[in-house]
Amino acid sequence: MSKVLIVGCGGVGSVAAHKCAQNSEVFDEICIVSRNLKKCDELKNKITGRTSAKISTAEVDANNVDALAKLIENFKPDIVMNLALPYQDLKIMRACLLTKTNYLDTANYESEDSAKFEYKEQWAFDDAFKKAGITAVLGCGFDPGVSGIFTAYALKHHFDEIETLDILDCNAGDHGYPFATNFNPEINIREVTAKGCYFENGKFVETEPMEIKRVYDFPEIGEKDMYLLHHEELESLAKNIPGIKRIRFFMTFGQSYLTHLKCLENIGMTSIKPIDFNGQKIVPLQFLKAVLPDPASLGSRTVGKTNIGCIICGKKSDKPVNYYVYNVCDHRECFREVGSQAISYTTGVPAMIGASMLATGKWNLKGVRNVEEFDPDPFMDALNKFGLPWKETFSPVLVE
Ligand code: NDP
Image 1 (cartoon, helix red, strand yellow):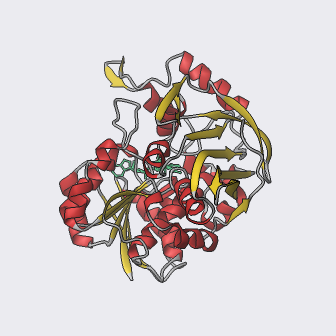
Image 2 (tube, protein in one colour):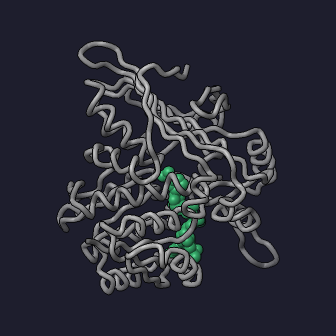
């Protein structure tokens, strides 16, 4: 039996809290915290009565390391799940270190004033976490997260060596708005307006934003336009998958989303540079976030499916192997189960599973780790059990 502290009760935090509560054999106490106690209490009320786990809430600003460490000292969780924003990663890791508590997140650190994400600041905690005898699991959502687990599973069971990996993220959901984002708008827009990047022959190659486009016929969805993006798991998989020659990440976008985004970019609304407005400093992107629909509110209006997976090519016993492993998730079914759309669902479920791997000792490496460093098998079983079943084929259509 174990205790989990969930920081953040937005789209992803809400799904993770529901799923921890469903897994009360592992989690018998759940504490949900954010800066807004009312929101945490509303979430608690939705879950209470549907689980034997004890649920509590608290208000904390995770940017205040001492306040968070005090809360951790009082509640004594086995794991802190960081489902707030990437800006808080280092602060929450510091609080975990102070209190010798395991840590897990779903997105790597980014500072608020530069739209650049990389692992180096979090990997720098490795020695300290090892000395403290605790674990930090980085990037345990779907992508990053399940994308790394799929790759580790493929390497363990189907390949002697992996040559190329394409991660394909398709969201064919329709929420009926001309423009909205499926997770935190600020983080989402920072990610998709950044330069693209792929890994090839030991180097990261930069592209212009949305410069590389492909069309792919996704199983259970159909043909969609997808664009090459920089994504954080490129960095960890290039380090952790021995001998890999190429890694690319593609995400689908509809024409309405791209047209709106271009227009917002052209008029300066996606900028993260503060401007003066009526004697006050405001960040245009933060203002845009305030007028866009809250991703947590999209669940009731979103129809359609997501398909996220990995196409992996390489060799087994000197013979070429092509392998595609993916999950298809239905927005309406997620809403029926936990009141959220599939993007929050496909992130919150793996976060809960990662926490349960630590809580049950199935994952027991110490230090700061990315998901592909752990045994993928119990995680793959748990995906099937907790709502994200996966499918595989050895004859996929490859991405050119
Ligand atoms: P939301 O904006 O919906 O939720 C963020 C939550 O964090 C809110 O509850 C907010 O509450 C809380 N929060 C923000 N700042 C603080 C703070 N200083 N202290 C305490 N709590 C804080 O975001 P999402 O749920 O959509 O996304 C959550 C995370 O998941 C993000 O990091 C995102 O990048 C990541 N993600 C990862 C994916 C993956 O596949 N790996 C996919 C999708 C998202 P309040 O403001 O009230 O404090």
